[in-house]
Image (cartoon, rainbow, N blue to C red; front, side, top):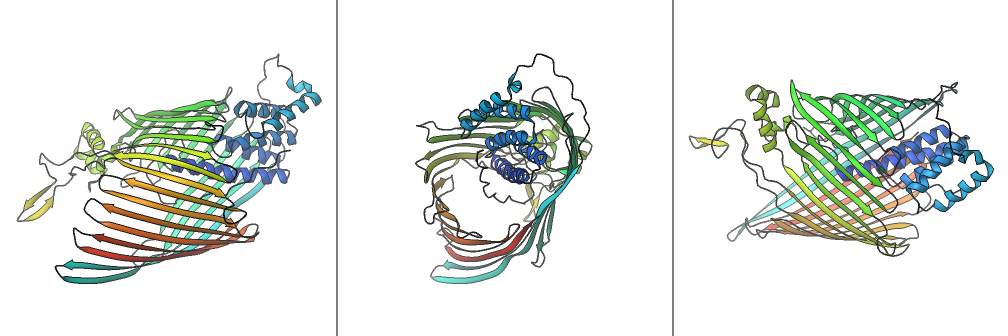
Length: 600
């Protein structure tokens, strides 16, 4: 039997609320993190003999967008089914593995296993000559129960001091300012309770984040990430989820409170319906929505989804969009495209195309690319209130729907990004790569107000802003970055991972050079150490210069298998000078954190 894959440490996700659709990098991070947790859960379930739990965990990995564990999950769901005695389904999983990953690292083992099963159980490979009967409800097995989750708590504190010198002729005026800019305790709670048998899988999920702010005059923040009940029927292939949940696909842009349902039919088809109210931070009223989507090719290399969604706010249609995604995934090549079009505003919200090609030069070079064109934030009627103090409810009363649509278009910038990268696997120890990125954000015209060219008037030498009017904003111009990166295994210590990167960035206002080196090492069985050094230099078109140096170190210790503690300390030194304003400043920041995590 092949060795179970090593589960890599997941990267912590940003807990900052966002009203926009997650970026591509955030979606990939979420998928990899979720897959790592599910793979570890499936492996532990196999060791405990809970094969139903293992199969469900590996299947959940396969339902995620293509990620680092997709190939492993396809292999181990077959092994788990064979352990459960479902040899026929195991054969189908193994055959799917060879179809998806003909050159996979475990392809030889899978072929050998299929050959052995063909000899020992030839009936499994006989063609089906009779139509498959509808699923029959058999006597249910006894419900099993499990609870697991984690609680983490970290204290953060930061102190800064800034010294500024202003030159006026031959006179210099120094000033100094210091303060504590951060003092907070951040708590993350993740919990799940399950009851399941051969047919039903019931889940209660709770995820919450709370940041207690101890600085005077600053509020604490709380963000309920998830609080839902989910029920799945394995035989009739339907599911229902009710409560606070994340909108991943189907045109839902963010977390929401509501209900989502799905029903699978045929081979690789699934229809979904979703309805609720967006719960992410909003400057105005929170919209309600209802949508439907159709998934196809869920277990084949070529597949995707199409959707239709309608969203209302304050009595009018906020967003009415169609869209979907199409993806093709195999071992050496994968590509995915996404599109969202608002049929009410008649504008393209988003188009994204990304892909990778592996082993293009002697099997040792990988190529990746990304094209991203989108409205940011996502285009809807509420954007008519952007950059203005006038709430959307007031705008709806004062303007026609066509005027609101025009304002929304004028106040929603378009961002474009293109990226191409290449990674070369020199040997088992070293990888090197190059990335090139170019991006820009469109200009915005003057909008709202009257026919004046400016959004302000002068009365008695006092500037008075015009209510509901927003001045024009220029384009950001093209900003591009080229970076070189190198990753080494066992550079300083036998089990360490070291990353080096060197970058150069330029836009119409400034240019900068950066260098970063980081190292992760398992010092002993229970100790890990992470170190990082950042260097950055920048100069702008007015003669200003900036230098920044930031080293940090983090140490973690595993008290028990489910309890860990860690602490981090860092400093940041920055120097700025401006020949135009004849000023220079030096700032110094110190920051540290400590805390722990308990898993159960």
